[in-house]
Length: 372
Image 1: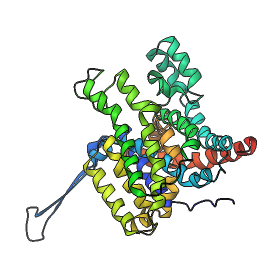
Image 2: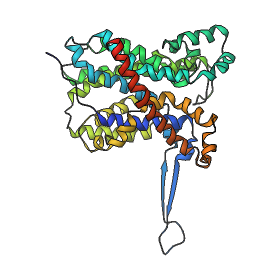
Image 3: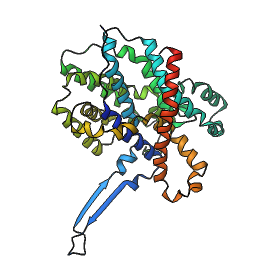
Image 4: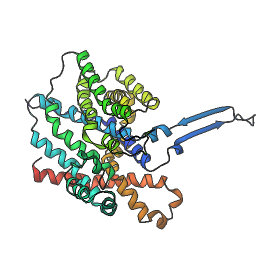
């Protein structure tokens, strides 16, 4: 008996819009631009009587956690779509791998081609051996296994090296049987979460790079391995796969999902620590995968429309940003006074064009050629 394809979860696509934009702001903004203070005055008084503050700087400054969210979400979405087929013995591994290749490689290749001007910088930054390793391994999606060249040519491309490995192991993960009881599954998920925090904890304890206070600007070979390699993030992917099984055990219309989603968002705002965010991401995903007001808001058409281009926006935002500013496009159009805000809008527009003019047509053609 053939397994039916599950319904789309539009709210998760809508949230991808904000996650991708937050990564753009993390790379190309000053986080403190996003702290706002409003003073409300009463008509009969000259002094402000009410202060209202919005602090979004911590969210933007921790934009890197959106990558962890994307990896967890990748595991969840794949398991949500393929678990039933895998358990029924209907998941063709080779066809699955071909389908994932056609999904990620067209835009990945475009990002590398648009990064050709980085070759001279990469040559100066690496030994000849490492440079040529980057040249060979990056198009093959395996550069992430060598921390020194994980970000070769295009910084965000390291995640595709990690994802390609996760796609490889997924067919075996998807065969895990659905647990009969909730509690043992939650304990297993907790174990994966704890294991996911081990690399970061070991780094903080032993401080192998001798960095007194590591932050977003810190650099060191061990820190590179912690940030950019597949083995450092595999727990997030596996947690996402297990989360899809938990999702099957919670009724879609349950009020619990709404409270989990709201609690997840509130918790993330107050606790921006990468490893500790995994359970909060899980709460958000479960909330948005349900039928409630939160999923309706984030599943609205404009957010879904932009969210569908989140992969293009994430992978190409360095390329597009450099294109906008190296060509002096804004000066020629008389829009430079609106920079960087106008640049963010143009980036989203270019990502949408890449989605509809390159990614989707290339994916369709590749699937025909590869019978994916």
